[in-house]
Length: 278
Image (cartoon, rainbow, N blue to C red):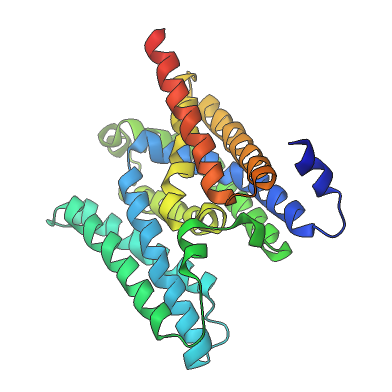
């Protein structure tokens, strides 16, 4: 870890500073949204959205490099597809007759397949591994502003609808009887989850995104009495996992995303053991 802190002050290694700052700032959005995802038990929906993101990334690469639409970047494509998946999942879940698990499976596999087809049809070499498993060391200064914008949006929306989100997560029927528009609130929660996932993919990739979104909140929930405490704990744990994973990956010369997720997984398993012994 001391090697990481020494490298952070090296003027020739700005990507490490960007990676750490972005990871710490992203922990705010991840901890807050992850708490709602865990409490509402929509982890598999979040997983489906994350895998659909590859379709948007592939479409962005194709439109940008083949069609020549310069503003249609992979990030733009990822955001559009993630939001579209959130809307479709919310609509089917709330109004449709189709089994939700069937739709999740279709979007999960279809999004991945579409993304690979677009990448294959785009001239040049684009490493899909960087999207599947992430690379926090590729974070740029522009990504820091994206994270700040997302944090501000999440804090604003959660601050305004905090009590309504609590009602949605714990007793949707009671919240509806109290006059809360739970359908629109659920859609808003899924859209916020989708935006957070797009950001999270930059750090740990599509395959492992669901782990970093849910594990910190799951661990914090074992030692918290309120949702607010759970959020704070998830934020701190997420920041700890990213910092420790980045330090270990730098020291051992290993992929940062995989190490971050492994640190989170080991901590979660240890929390399970600790709760069983109590």
